[in-house]
Amino acid sequence: MGAMHSASNPYSPGAGRRPFELAGRTALINDFDLLISRAAAGRTDRGIVLHGLHGVGKTVLLTEFRRRAEEAGFLVVSLEGRDAEGGPKAVRAKLARGLLQAGRKASSRAKTPALAAALGTIASLPPACR
Ligand SMILES: Nc1ncnc2c1ncn2[C@@H]1O[C@H](COP(=O)(O)OP(=O)(O)OP(=O)(O)O)[C@@H](O)[C@H]1O
Ligand SMILES: [Mg+2]
View 1 (cartoon, rainbow, N blue to C red):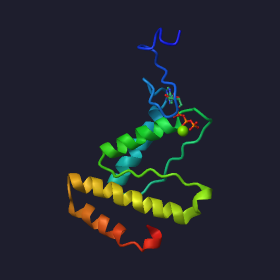
View 2: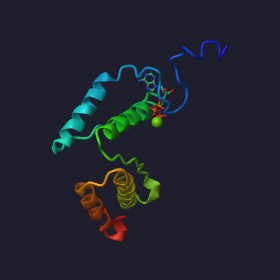
View 3: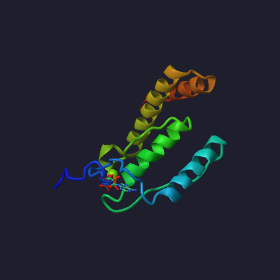
View 4: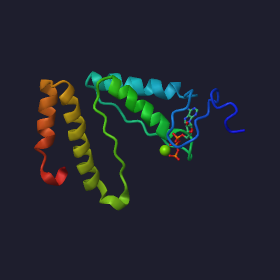
């Protein structure tokens, strides 16, 4: 039975797999696009927290957010904070490493003065923060 309608089946079973149709997420995607344009204009905004039951679609939506931010020219860093992994200090170090990596990748494509300055700032953080 499994393969019968696999070509037209809109369901993409599996954690984090993008479904054929990202149903019911228009409002959240619009919120995120607004956040992107505010950030691009140099205005800070509150973050967005996605929460919900197992399998409701958090990872898929985060991946869509990532795609939209990258398309808008932002560097995106993914990191997971876990209590067992050293708390805020470890998360800060991971963030700095992620920023450096993403920044280097971006500057290998196009080196802008702003990017070079940002990379310099991150690279000059004390080792304990990296
Ligand atoms: N908006 C959506 N419309 C249709 N299907 C979706 C949607 N979002 C996610 N799915 C489907 O639901 C399943 C679970 O999605 P996802 O892995 O993103 O859930 P999750 O909330 O991150 O789960 P967990 O809490 O286990 O991490 C996947 O098969 C995905 O294709
Ligand atoms: Mg998930």
